[in-house]
Length: 71
Image (tube, rainbow, N blue to C red; front, top):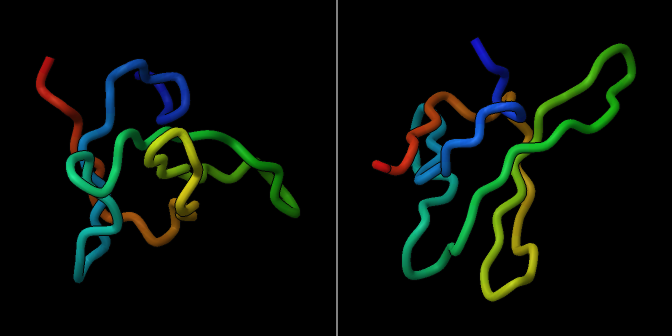
């Protein structure tokens, strides 16, 4: 099984337990996971892009569900 950062599928939406954290569509063009060094280990973050600019970064500890786009 691939990790989030190794998976080549496009992410459609990130959700916390209460709300959407980002959904590709009107306000978001792309959601990309990446690794950032933490104190003791690598931490997965998600960068949210609109119009070629980063509009938000979300730490994976706040993400309950990752939904992938249909291919």
